[in-house]
Amino acid sequence: MFYQELYPLLGKLFYYIAAADGEIQPTEKETLRQFIQKNWKPLENSTDRYGTDQAYLIDFSFDYLEAEGPKENIFQSFEEFYHENKPKFTAEIINNILQTAKAIASAYPEENRREEQVLGRII
Image (cartoon, rainbow, N blue to C red; front, top):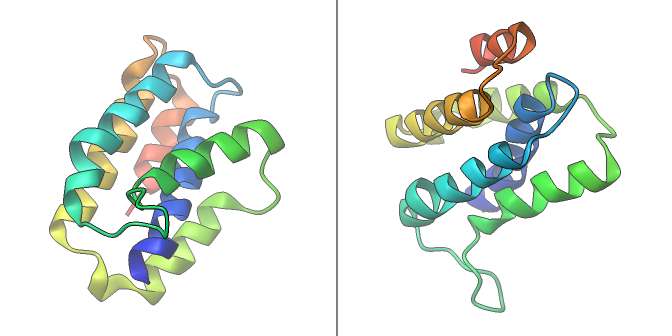
């Protein structure tokens, strides 16, 4: 249950980082997809009823926000979830979050001040 809630929130968080400068670059999306494959899928083995790895909820959530736009305070939602579930956030999860966030922010050569500010607020 924890991962089913975590993954969509991570998709929102990573969208928030990518969109901090007002535009999502294809390189940012590709970076996220690479990190899902390399870091998030191996983290645990939960799947949905169709056998799809739950880690893809990160990508689905990101894509949904890109298409529909945010309807909530994304960062606040993540912060609340983090504080409510802090004991479940292992060092590996935290490391994955930080690595993914930094990689997304630096995926486009012109990392800006807004993305740096968002990175500073994470965990």
